[in-house]
Length: 352
Ligand code: CP3
Image 1 (cartoon, rainbow, N blue to C red):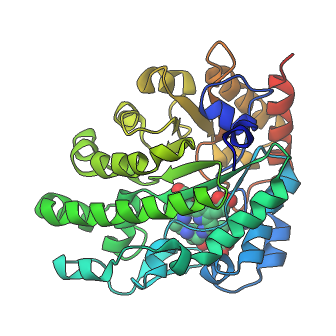
Image 2 (tube, protein in one colour):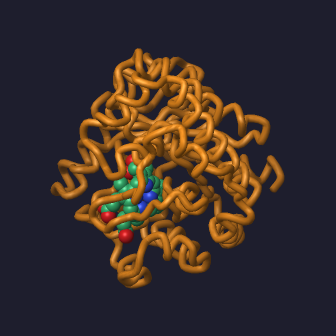
């Protein structure tokens, strides 16, 4: 992939705060149960099996591009794919999320986290990336790769299931900071390997999902999470591909997240993008942040909210904003509304 080809998309230009032909838009979790074509293609098997089927994963990645005309495809995979692939014993339960048969409890569990060798452990993800990239060649649509940030992946490994309180995670990070540090280092190395392989297979931008970081205080984030997050982003910096760092409920963490080394900070719906810009500084683009819950509301409500996001996201020169939801598309989202949002953002931001 030549750098010229990579820069030839509005998404990549927006990440680098360069001029765009129009504001790029995509949706987190744009592939998935909200789409009838997804439900038809995917059937009822395990989502990890669908991810391991490269032609199917490539098709599921491309469905939302065809349906919505978004500016980016996000690889159909999951943040727990690497830990599943090395045999930690992770599964994804429908309607619930990742579950772990034997959660991470003590130093002995570190030996269950061997390094990831993407070409051997997750060849299907790389095959899907290559197929999608080939399909998108010349379309102006970028391929986004992704990984889980160390904290959010650790939260599943330690809690053993989705958690609201993160009690066991916090007990480990505060109670045994040395072991916590070792776990973060292992997971950071895994995310670096996974992202580098996706980039080499054709991903033109990457997103690091630290979805649950908003459950931490700024002090906890700075001490226990920021170093490993920074290590992931430093570990891919030489490849020159832009990075997006995203979490939910991170209003009080945005200024710290901005020191992690990402080009773009993803913002949920709780913080208006103009306020977020003040917190992350002028050297970052911002991504977001229409409330996903609004995507079931009547169109005039959504239109007004989307226009507000566009106004708050504009930095004066019309650069450095990637339109997205503030978190993933909900299964009950109205897909007609999502398509109308894409058209609105494109029409309203058309330059020249
Ligand atoms: O369009 C896309 O974004 C598709 C790719 C994608 C998936 N998971 C597929 C998936 C992405 C980017 C993810 C990331 C992911 N996985 C995150 C970070 C994003 C976020 O929402 O904050 C997290 C926390 C996970 C862990 C996970 N996997 C959860 C919480 C769930 C939901 C469980 C459920 O059934 O509601 C999953 C399963 C999952 N991963 C689904 C999809 C489309 C839904 C299940 C299915 O279709 O079978």
